[in-house]
Amino acid sequence: MNSVKAVFKKQIKDTYHNTATLVQFIIFPAVAFAMTHFVARSHDFEGPETMFITMMSAAFVGMALVPFVAGIIAEDREQKSLRFLVMAGVKPPGYLLGIGGVVFVTGLFPALAFSLMGRFSGQQFGLFMAVFMSGVVASILLGLTIGVFAGNPQAATGLAMPIAMVLGFGPMISPFNETIERVFSIFYTQQLNVVMDSFHVIDGYRPDVNLGQSFAIIGANIGVLIVLFVVAFAKKGLKG
Picture 1 (tube, one colour):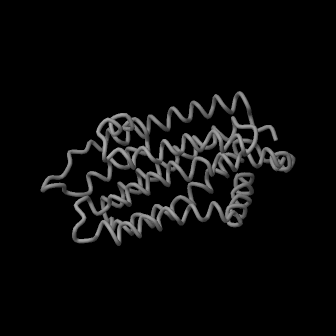
Picture 2 (picture 1 turned 60 degrees about the vertical axis):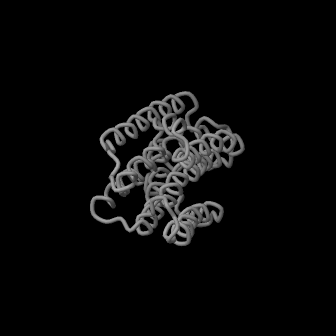
Picture 3 (picture 1 turned 45 degrees about the vertical axis):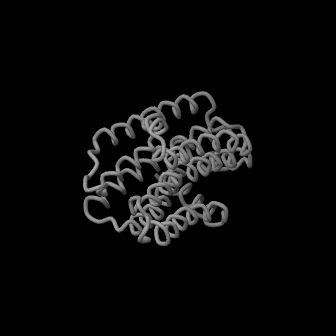
């Protein structure tokens, strides 16, 4: 437990001094706020009021977190930080839990910002936070897997960015194309769209959304990512 706390504190400091990362945690909620305030809540907008909040939430979970986590692991390996952590008694599980814990806690802030913009309360707030933070967990696992597998930050970025763009842009395009929506329905980022569809009434009717199915899909995603992470870790480890 002490090793987890040590890694957690270290990563908090590193993240605080990483301007590029902090900007990502701000820019997605900022874009959602601007588009919601100036477009979605205008009198002539025909879509749901939370449309841009949904888009930017899925984009943040998919596009920002995966490269961020992968970069942390790869950079620590390249800079030999892991060697010093191991010499200090930090075990791999403690290191990974510490990194994942920082990202999870940090992810709570944009989640709360998005929920405030959407004016979610009660059941809507609970559902949004549950689906958003479940997506955060999935992205952490995916980022850890890529970071463990990649040999350096450049390789981690090269692997993470295409995957992150697919996960982030897919849900943004899916409302405009039924085929893409069906294809991306198996991914956890798309399920954020599905859950939030249940929040608003369209043409006098509330969409019939199977919330159990949505969270089952997210759970299946997390299960698959756990297996991939275990395989990657067994093969590559955390050699720094």
